Image (cartoon, rainbow, N blue to C red; front, side):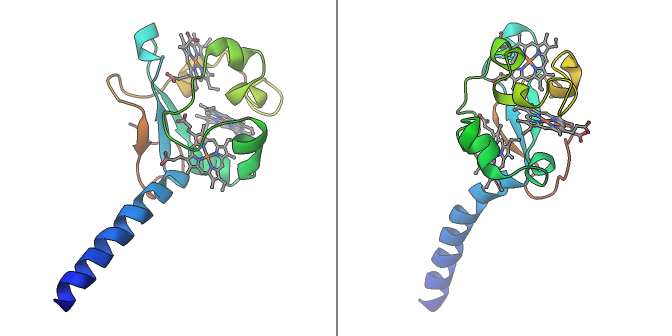
Length: 124
Ligand code: HEC
Ligand code: HEC
Ligand code: HEC
């Protein structure tokens, strides 16, 4: 009985803890990329998160905190929204470096990859 309680507690803890790994992992964005002939986008969350405050992206830029929840178009990026607020050739390299963002393996669905084990863009 005690073991059962401990197990269900552990399962609950895991269920709650796993989503938080998104903070450290890479996020693959593939709502529109592949259907438009581009590789999926790999966004290294940890790499950015140690350089900027959460609210820069999740407040001011309006990125929803759920993998795959944001509809991002290249026109927005080129016009300085989403990734384009920084990837504009001033804060960071500009939007014409297609391959640096569209670096994911074809066929990868949007989601969280790498758990807490990646500190930069992994090869997904
Ligand atoms: C700073 C990162 C970044 C760079 C650089 C970048 N993209 Fe994107 N791109 C994205 C993101 C994020 C999305 C949305 C991904 C999704 O949901 O599929 C996207 C989506 C797209 C889409 C599908 C949506 C649409 O607007 O039609 C195309 C096509 C595309 N990119 C082409 C390009 C090309 C071509 C280049 C280089 C000239 C480029 N991208 C450079 C981040 C980038
Ligand atoms: C440079 C921009 C940026 C910064 C800074 C940033 N995030 Fe994110 N975050 C994103 C993007 C982009 C996504 C993916 C959204 C998508 O897939 O549509 C994301 C996704 C998430 C998710 C969803 C993960 C999941 O499991 O679905 C969480 C949670 C999150 N961020 C939390 C944070 C926290 C907490 C901080 C600060 C410690 C932070 N973010 C800082 C851009 C950022
Ligand atoms: C708040 C500013 C900011 C936003 C928003 C932002 N980036 Fe970045 N990003 C940076 C900076 C700064 C660097 C480091 C540039 C350098 O090293 O020259 C970087 C680097 C990167 C790298 C390379 C990481 C490495 O290991 O060298 C990738 C890939 C990347 N960004 C993708 C994205 C994508 C995709 C988005 C949108 C979903 C995005 N970024 C949004 C600021 C930002």
